[in-house]
Image (tube, rainbow, N blue to C red; front, side, top):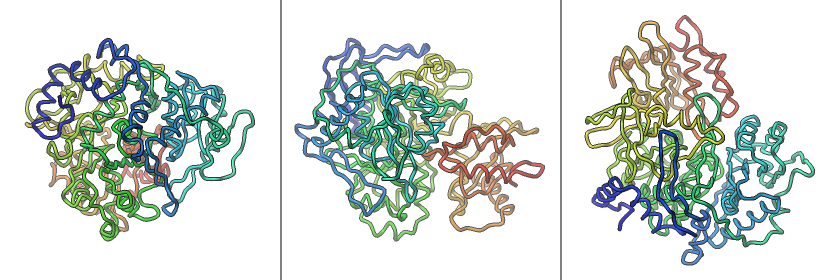
Length: 640
């Protein structure tokens, strides 16, 4: 029986089977493709109105046995992990599945030596080095819950997450490389731990070899502990619904939400979505450029590829350092077949000279992918032509931290790609579009709020220590459905286009205008590299549109004249109704470390409410917020 759609006929048949009997479909897939100590008593038991979600109840397993151990026979000498360091002149690392198992087991024994046991929360505040991956898997090996915090968040952000998750252990490094910068991770951690009475011990990896402060009886060197451990460690047998990890994502209230994912369902869906979307075949090299501090790194650097027995690339650094061809140099060096990155990175790299691309052999590429936000059409075509040479399908993936894996995407060379569309749901995923009253819209060419009508294995189970917030956020608005918080359009063939967060849909004079569609239009202007659109209150229209526009590198313009140009461009290319009331020319947009544009901050600036912007310390570029605030002025507030 087929579960991976290799052609459109497969896709239709698998979708039909998964829709008609989801429990039979997911049960058969899990039984066929994974190792279990005990199979389940019941495939699923879900009451979405109460946020009650259970998959593979009664099953026993350990995810690391599925990621590593089961491959060590036939695939033991295959490369599991390729690590590329920040410094392109240094040697990286290649580990086989046999070698990876020993590193993970040694790390697990190191954690056990410090007293870590099943159910304990361990915070990982580490750079993109192999030891981060070892530690994640080591936690899973012994049943501890890993809490990865991006190694760039401030001391306060780190402290908030440690305290909320009630972590007793912190694993960090002296420093982390990011391009030409060294982030003083240990110093930041020391500052955070002044507020974290729950932390008992820390482990420090010597990475940057910088001078650090040392707290006796609390701090432990990684190398001192690691070097004395055995390289065998029996895997803890876990219940299907035991927590695997907590990962924090931004909340609308400003307080991060600790999304809890559990062992069995997450494992099954991460591998299933990896296999289907990217159409992975044996011996291929997969590179997801995300940071492991984000769910993309969890699912498509670590768990998904390793469960599939793939070779996964892990990268330390930034895409334009030491030069703008760093990505292409790595693809050439390791003969990467599947390349998965963000629209932000694509738009940045599209500014580099063509000879920086042409001097590298990219012929190994078979599949390209994007993740993080909708990709605009200009960037899509550049990616397709310049990097894929017009031959590689682009999978435009839509999903969330809460979903555990990709829910809507074309499947590489199986279902058609459409620029700016996520296209079709994966088999087994059942999206619907509803109006604000919760009524399903079944018409062709429909638009509304995007919900998922039926459960799937990879969905988050709760918000740590706040299940009521979990229910209120995701299941209260439309009982019986998962509310994504996104708006979407669906065409007559069932293809979905994500229009942006529902709170990013601007209603101007009674017309609903999706920010993603507006941004795509502005980004098509030849002088624009990136834009962000928000709404703000307007005395006449109810709401008006404010567009923040980034020019191509080095371009000098008369800002007032250029703003009028953008207004006329939108009026002509999209609609006069969509013409921005205000346009702000800027060199940068406030972004998280994963590249997500913080429209909440832009909205506050557009509203003139700069006193309530909130903490900006976790941004990649907090300085640009001050620049944008200084642009305020005149009777209209912001811009021209």
